[in-house]
Length: 375
Image (cartoon, rainbow, N blue to C red; front, side, top):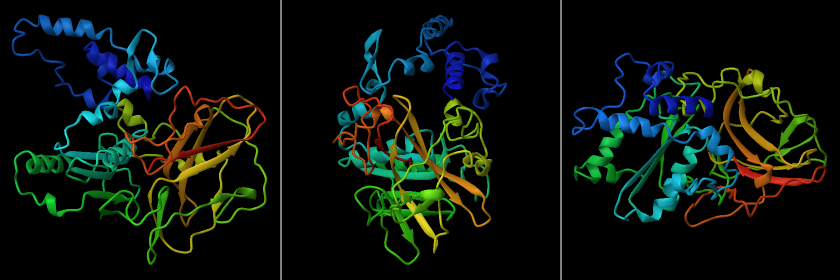
């Protein structure tokens, strides 16, 4: 998706209409491109701006120069990932400014985490949290059990309602509602809570809820013969030969980040997940609800000094078909950087990704990777 994003940014920076046409967001023939400001009567300021934008950085080039959090690009010490993050400026926000953190379960590669940690960190501000069954931009309802492909939620009206309440002083009833609202996929219902994770919950981890039981954290163990069990089995190891042709496909949660129009996500997950090293539990004794972050603890030995470990959570239906739920990833280089910060409060393990914590693997020696899957 980064390649497509770069193509889009270049086309926008240079007002290249033919290059923009393949992107659904800008393919409308009535799209008129960037417009001059009022005082730019002859269009010279607009022409200068377009020329200046030809020097914009390219994401694909930039990310390769920054393998660590807090590092800067070589040509500009002020240009870092921190400088591009709202979290870098969060403490400058006055405490009387109300905040509405909105995201979707499949909102790219971590925007849902950003919304949740913003809610958990800026506790002195009037704050609300909304997590829906959406992709990036809330263009699509991602639920396989949806009634329609659209978002099916009046998001812009909800945002206006928020501003009416906090800016215009209109009684919208917002003050009588609980601050956290989230959508349960497959259950297909909205739920409300007073806190995140929904109470009561363990200090870390996802919340598994049975219909007649209180929320609790559940631990599962990878055992022999591909079994996933609530109890650990005998010690052992499974071998996996990495195959770089195996992927999650081209209809994933990342495509919207590159402005690609996707209406159906992971349609072939049953076939794709079978290519991975996978572990499957016995059928659950009763219907369960999973809310929050699942955490993976993965012990590996590798023939190489570095590796990227992807973990996927899949729902297996009664007919044997599989539905993608969520995923997490960690580069082994960053496995030792677990930390909590008052500027990034989280209810899940957080990896710092900084240079000081970076450790390559020793080939053949075991190492543990701990990381959270996306909520």
